[in-house]
Length: 197
Ligand SMILES: [Mn+2]
Image 1 (cartoon, rainbow, N blue to C red):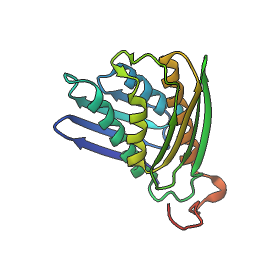
Image 2 (cartoon, protein in one colour):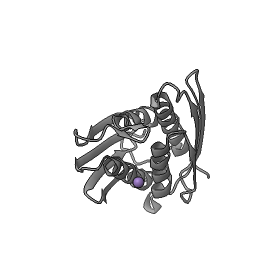
Image 3 (cartoon, rainbow, N blue to C red):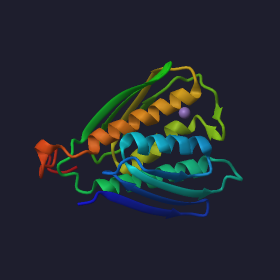
Image 4 (tube, rainbow, N blue to C red):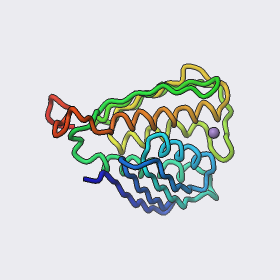
């Protein structure tokens, strides 16, 4: 039973293809045209042990906003698709990841309901290459809306913008991996008293 998702999303602003295999080995093939974002999606696949393809051609002549946002929307939709009926998974996951002076704490519930809580240092370099650092929250919002998960991401401290963002993606990857992995004690069981996720 493979757990894969594939989403193609085409608008006048962007063309996105996302493929994800939750039971992969961290093989990543990502190109969005935004170098630092590629670096972050690479973290997501690698540390989540997802096989992940993201191919985005966006209107970078305007700026990187649509390219980044639409990739995150498609990624969320593909992740939800790959989760399928959620029978036999752990459902909850959390991970704390340091990156030198920065720390990210991520907790996730694959609940079927979208909710994001996000805090990070307010003083941060505005740009990392072509990546606008205010986009991190927007990526998470977009992913959460489509994946329909509850996601709490906190960076209680950090100084270097590259580190602050990267530790969030690493911790997110690992938390998503733990939540989506199959629980050997829960085979055939939907982890919900309500009977629906
Ligand atoms: Mn890095």
